[in-house]
Amino acid sequence: MNRDVVITPPFFEIGPKAYVYGAEIVALARLADDLGREHRVQVILTPQIVDLALVARAVESALVFAQHMDSLPVGRGVGSVLPEAVRAAGAAGVLLNHVERRLPRDELTRTMRRAEEVGLATMVCADDARDAAAIAALRPDVIIVESPELIAGGRRDDDERRAVAAANEAVWSVDPAIRVLHGAGITDASDVEAVIAAGAQGTGSSSAIFTAADPSSMLEAMIRSVRRAWDRTH
Image (cartoon, rainbow, N blue to C red; front, side, top):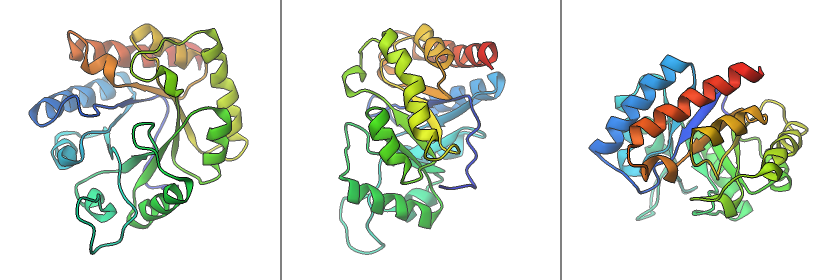
C-alpha cells in the first residue's frame, strides 16, 4: 500500500482502454479533472501507456494510473512495461489484473512489490467477494470488484447491488484502509448513482463513456451522479 497517494471517496475511474488516445484522451482528461474538482470527486484516469506522460502533464488533481505494467527490473525486456518508466512518466499508480490482462497470483504479487518499490499505488481487479478477500491480503490501495459477465455492456440487477455490501465486508475484514470500487455494468448515470447508493466508495466506466454519442456529456452526468449519491447516503 502506498500511503503517499491519497484516494478519498467518492472516486471515479475512467478507463479508456484502447478506445481513444493522443489529443482525444488529453482533452477528455482535462474535462474530467475540472469536473472532479467542481463536484469534489477524486478522478482516476487509466490511459494507454504511451499517453501516460501527456495525460499526467494535462491534469492537476486527477490521479493517472497505468493500465498495466510488468515486474521486470531495469535491463533486458523488449516490449515490457518497466515500473520505473511508469513512475517517471508521471503516473501515481497502476491498474493490475483486469479481466483483459489477467496475472497469475505469483506474478501479481511480484508486480505489486515492484510498484511499492518505485512509489506507485496499486488498483487491483477482483471478480467477486471471495476473490476480493484474497487480493486484500496483498494490501493494494484499491480493489476493483467487477463481474466479468458485466464488463462492456452487462446490466446490474438487484443481486449485483446486494453483492456490493458483501464484497466491502470481505475486503474490510482484511484491511479497512483498502478502498473498494465497484465497476462493470455501469452503462449510464443512473447505474452510477445506484452503485454508490448501494455502498460503493467509487465506481467507473469505460465503454459507456467512450462509445456514447457524446462522451463528454456522459462523463459529466456520471461524475455528477457520484457526488449526488454520495451526499444522499453519507
